[in-house]
Amino acid sequence: MEVQGRIKMIGETQTFGSNGFRKREIVVTTEEQYPQHIMVEFVQDKTDLLNNYQAGQQVKININLRGREWVNPQGETKYFNSIQGWRIEALQNEATEGNVPPVPPADAFEPAGDLKEEDHDDLPF
Image (cartoon, rainbow, N blue to C red):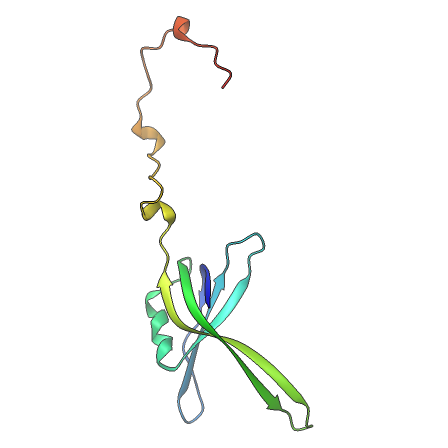
């Protein structure tokens, strides 16, 4: 599975317990009609994958959905889900990929100086 969107936030690496478990969270905002802010966690050696990314970049993250069961001290069973990332890659804007020709700046064109009013046509568009 994968999630695509723009990076909203990248957290610092957190270390837990005596075994040195590491976790780092990233929030990606999807670009659809109703944008979603998806929090993805990278764990252990995968936390370093986020070092070369920053807020505002468009990315694609390969994810695994994880679920676990926990029984609290009162004997009630609870269920938790998490989204774990295992790969991240930057997405290029379509205009820079060559799929769409870049739009030249407006000042790249000189105004036509040899127009005459009698050359005007009556096209409706």
